[in-house]
Length: 113
Length: 117
View 1 (cartoon, each protein chain N blue to C red):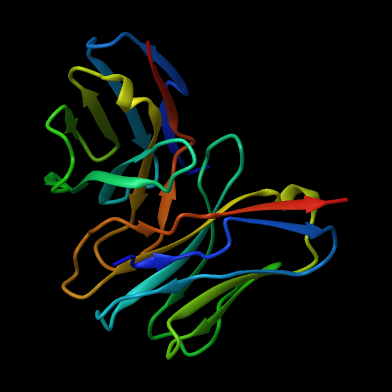
View 2 (view 1 turned 180 degrees about the vertical axis):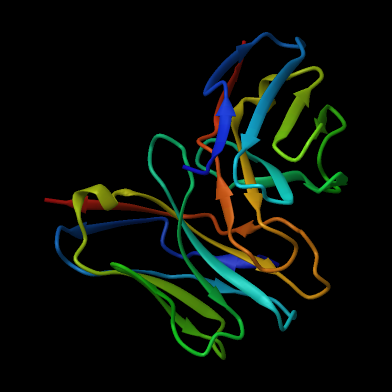
């Protein structure tokens, strides 16, 4: 089945230690998104890629970076995680620009110790 | 100003009853889409139903239907014959479409639905 896959499902990292979360998709969608969802809150968009074009949200901290080496894969890098970065990180894809639904992966729950 | 408002933080509903989850939205863009997602405790966001701003009829998907009232800017989700497995967080979301942008979804704060046996 076509799907959005995120690895790992659970990630524990130490304060200040860089961490990378990965997302892959078999849907062949043009757009990939990263959302941050803190406990009991709505998901918040961090950035997205339309094909190879990177689009950062204005209030996304510089600590968060992303890479999309090809259509199928997208990575979220947190350069120096703080305690406040503990959250669920959701990857999503969308077929194209415009008003299309987004399909989400199962998420990676990040804990910072 | 909030773009998506969900006024029910939590709801308790008896199994097999119908339930309506409220959602109002705010946009000046004539082209937009409204979405409902279900998020169980496992964390995955499950797409339920979609309504486009130009759609003439209310969307339906199995037990889910969307009561779209454009003039009132509301897009309520109706779940018929609720089941225990419907217990989850439900998010209303919007995506504005004019200009062909690839912007992400704007979510409401969610409604925590609990189905009681």
